[in-house]
Image (cartoon, rainbow, N blue to C red):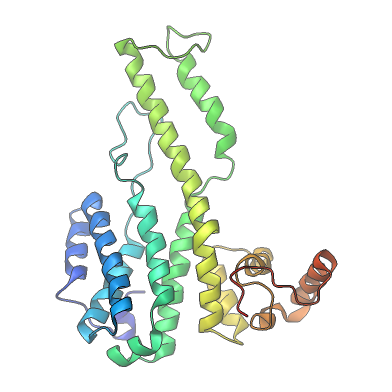
Length: 283
C-alpha cells in the first residue's frame, strides 16, 4: 500500500527518488547504505522539531521503499562462490527494523497536519508497513535450522576426498572450496538467527505497543494487524502478554471467551488478576 493510496504525493526531491533509482538498478548494497542515512536523518528531524510538508512526503515514501525493498539473497551453502554481501553487516535486516522504529516514534498528529491527511489514515498506513516487515522476516526464519547445521558441516567436510573420516579441512588449495561452503553456511545460520532475534527481541516490542496506542479500545484493529504480521489466532494473546502486557490500557484486548480463558491462565500462573507482563506495558 504505497503512500499515494492515501493521497500522499510522490516525492520528486530528497531521498526517495534516489532510493527508487537504486532499487531499479538492483544495487542493494548502495540502497541499504543510503537507507541507513535516511533513517539517521529522520531521527535527527524528530529531535530538532517539525518537518516541512516536502520532508514528510519524502520520509514516508522513503520508509515505504526501505520497508518493501528486496533483502539480500540468502547465502548458498552448496556454492563455492563467496557470498557477495558478507561485508554488508546485515544492513538489510537492520534497515527493516529501523523502519518500524521510525514509524513508531513519528508524531502522527503533526504529520497529518503537514500532509493534510486524516490522522487515522496515517496510523493504518504505519501499522500496515510494520506488519508487512515482521511477516517477511518471520517467513524467512527456519526454526529448526540449528539442528541441521552441524550435520551439514559434517557433510561438507566428509565430501572432501582427503577427509573421509571427517578430519579438519587443511590448508591445501583443494580445501578452499569447502572452506567457502562452510563460510556460506555460517552466514546463512547467522542470518537465520538474526531474523528471529530482530523480530522477537525488538520489532514485536515496538509493534504491539504502537498498535495499542493507535487503536485504543479497538481490539479488532489490533488483532487484524497482528494477524497481518503473520501470527496465528492462538499466538495473539501470548504476543500481547510479552510485549504490551496485560494492564488497564490493554484489558480490552482480553475480552471474549478466549480472552477470559487466557486471563484465568494468567491468574493461575501469577496469582494476580491484572499482572503487568512486560517492561513495555503501558502504565
